[in-house]
Amino acid sequence: MGNYLEPLSYLVFVIVFAIEYKRTRRVLYLSLLVYYLAACSIIFPASVIAFDPKGNNNTLYNIHYIVSIVFLSFYFVAIINIPRFTRFAVIGTLAVTSVILFGWLRSPDVFNSLGCSVFFLLAVLYCFIYLRQLLKDPGEERIMAKFDFWYVSGSFLYFSGGFCIVASYKHLTAIIPEAQQSMLANIWSLQNILLFISSMVTIYGLIWMGYTKQLR
Image 1 (tube, rainbow, N blue to C red):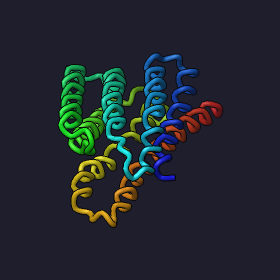
Image 2 (cartoon, rainbow, N blue to C red):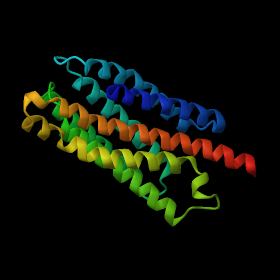
Image 3 (cartoon, rainbow, N blue to C red):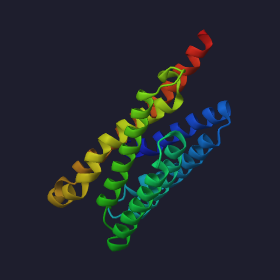
C-alpha cells in the first residue's frame, strides 16, 4: 500500500487542480494539472516495478524529477514577485537538471540521491521564498483565503521532510544489510506519507476556501 500512496497523492492533486482551474480558468493551474497527470502516468508504473525485487524504476524517477523541476519552476516564477527571481529559477532549473542527468548517465541503475536531493532543496527554497513574500505583503485578501498558500504550505512540508530521506537514501542502501532491505521500503514510505499529507493539506484548503466563501 505504501508504494501506491505516491501515485494516489498525485491523483488527489489532479482532482484539486482540475477543480481550481475550473473555478479560476488560470493557465497556471492548468499547467499544474498537466504536470500531475504526467506524474501519475510516470509514478504508477514505477510503483508497480517497486514490487519486483529485480525491478529498476530509477529511469522513471529521473524523468519524473526533471519534469517536476521544470513545471514547479514555472509555477513559482508566476507567483513570486521578486526582482531577478526568474533568473534564479532558470539557473536553478538548469543546475538541477544537469545534476540529475549527470547522475542518471553515470549510474543509470542506482538511485540518483544527489540529483533528487538538489531538486528537493531547490523546491524548499522556492516554497520558503514564496511564504516569506506572502507574510511580508499579504495584500488585502486573507492569507488563508489564497489557494497558493495552502498548496505551497503542503509542498514545503513534503519537500523539507523528504529532503532528509532522499539525501540519505543512497548511503542507507549501502550500509543496510541485504537481509534488512525491507527497511528501505519503510523509509521511502515515510516520504510517500508526507506527500499524501501534502495533498490533504491542499484539498483541505480548497474545501475551507469554498466553505468560508459560502458564509460571506
